[in-house]
Image 1 (cartoon, rainbow, N blue to C red):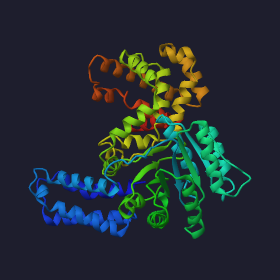
Image 2: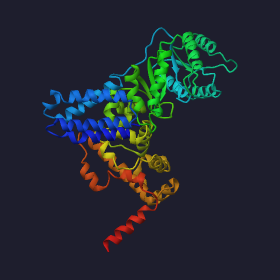
Image 3: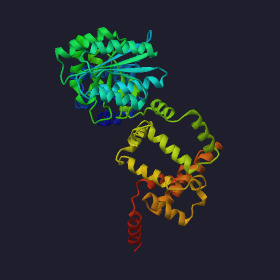
Image 4: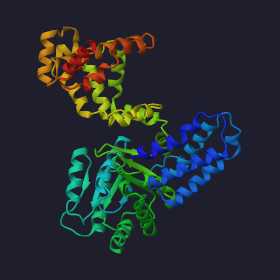
Length: 469
């Protein structure tokens, strides 16, 4: 969602990074571009004014003008101020005598029900025993939705279909959680299409009954500055502790995420980065600031990789790869692990320095990745384990079985061979000769196997033959 803002900020700062000296005019020009970028991102006007003023004050100080690398120093200041704007450090939940109660509040359509299930799954991964109380009795499908999500992730959901009193549901749900030994209880409350007295009165009654240790306001990032107005309205009636922001995978401009902490004084604690139940993350302002400025996010990349593969599986794969024993079964496991980490384009942007290199490239097509998977699954177990047995006749069968061309099968076979060679070299302490791999065409093979459509090979040959004539 920060792509446009990221491009504008990087453009404003890009010309200054390598300069050996900065003057006031250059800094003022950069500040104007930053101000426009933030306003276009739907950041609150008061927030923009204060942010630009703080950056300008520091940029005109001695730490930049006297620095050996003033351009880089200015980027560092912008990074630090962006981090402070979003909340400095990560803010976790408070836990006390079990069961710890977490109350979710917000408007209808903000994603509270799904967020309740996502948060329960995240807490279970951290070793907690969570349960959820379905206290949204206003929306007819809310209870059914939460029950279905609970079955999907195998987390208990307390619900009652024949009552209209959310306070009674919460009280009985908490009694059940204590009996069952649950140490965390998440309460999903009702919302409205707008903030009104009836909604707030009900929330206050539910909060008084639940006595939550954490009150999280669920905000839809797609609503822009309106999300900040909603946060202020809720803050007046129920003192929430933090924000759970949803739909950050959408095309919102990012204004809500950059404004809410400054305006309300409450940090963003969690962000939803996709529709799947496991796509909820702890919010780290410093990491988000680095990603906005194109510096990557190595820590989040490592955490996603660790979550995507089991320890024993990881050790076995490392051992085999270091020996050069990279079969198509290993290839398939690697692909599945990569896909569990999230959208490939988003993963690549977490690698420092790679964001700018991706500009102008087409989005990585998930269907094309599925085509590679189809080729491997069309092989027999023997062919996947011992790729050397795949001759011309087998290649034709694999291509027909996967709906691809023989050329695509050949490219994938070559890609596996090059990867096995590279892994074996790394196992012996040798860095791969990437220049030679590019010259051999091996490094391009995986992408070619994904992106070449059936029939394109013939067209390429015709073009080459015409060029020779």
